[in-house]
Length: 268
Image (cartoon, rainbow, N blue to C red; front, side, top):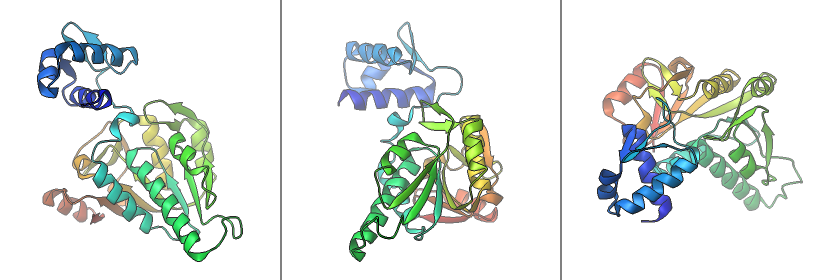
């Protein structure tokens, strides 16, 4: 197991339990206690946890893994969901993307799809303008799409959150208040049949809510592990969601409750 894989595993344990004990983590990861101590010390230096005698605890009550440590979870499911989401978009649309690992995969799928369509048609990217306009508040998504000539990229202003690379605050809200979106693809931290789409952080939830309000169609993309879960802040009710794209691990009861709430559920 590489250091990066160990760190991912340790942070997963911390996210689920709120604390990590050196001896228990060493046994779970099949490495020495000395290796776990070094890993915890290095993670503490990055302010990803707080070291304690014999282990570590999470920062604060509500613990959120930074985006770079969440990207490996349910990777195959996210790739399938992203490919399906990209197929929903037609040329010429204005598409909103908030931050997150699944929406990052959607951005990549969109770039590949529309680059492929241009290549098949033999049309130079500059000859007929962009095939798609993407509006995003995620710095990592913007960095990937900025070099794609087939996509017109619009970014919001705002203050960057290091955990998710999302821009939040009044500057981000100001830009979203001036645009109209055909489709918004939203990543979420939880979907609850009663509370709707949710996020861990209230400022990110507020910006995602604006995305939903500015769009004619709202598509939520998430792997099944987040279904039936609540997070801290509400993005929007299920009445605002047109389509939920998820994987086949969705519980039948959860799917029925979401359908009863008027949400079309598509599994891939």
